[in-house]
Amino acid sequence: MQLIKKNIEWVSVIILIILFILTAIGVHYDIFYNIDMGAYHILSSISISGFWKMITTFASPVFVLLVIVIILVIISNKKYGVLLFINTIFIFLLNQILKLIFVRERPIELMLIDEHGYSFPSGHTMMAVAFYGFIIYIIWKMNLSKKMKKLFTVLLSILILLISLSRVYLGVHYLSDVLAGIFIASAYLIIFIKIIRLKE
Image 1: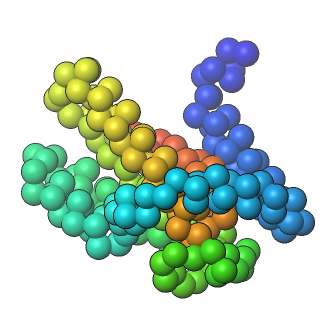
Image 2 (image 1 turned 90 degrees about the horizontal axis):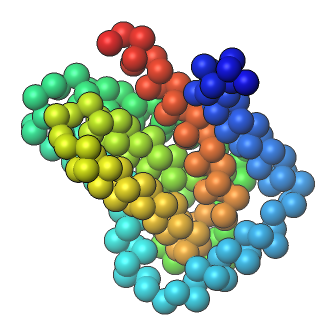
């Protein structure tokens, strides 16, 4: 038990990767079809298209790059701005590689906005988890009160969740795409942060 506690981050990475693999297997054998459709119908019943279209842009390439530029300007430690940019490139490349491996088609008949490329795992979800998750890490490194750090952590965590759900509502991804994106991006982020800590 002590060994697990000491290596809790690596244990978390292993669990997350296993969950990703199980999700991929489930998708391959069409196990999640009813769950995917059920989640879509539940979310699509919440008729606030404008809200979901706005939320999903927070993980778009243009918005993400804009945030990186702003962070580079406002924070004194430019290292974290550069690392945020590197992190963004890595998660984008990882997503593209995984899409080419699994080649799952998007739910074209459900799409409310135009999207291209394969569906599994969700790129916006992976970007949201890795990008805003790393911003949370940066915030905890800043000279802010613990109350403010907790507030930003909660707000950004909610944003990650909303971005992920927006992809299902907009019909550009299945719920299983989103869950897989959360699992693998979370595993990636833990590893990325551990590597950074080794050099600090």
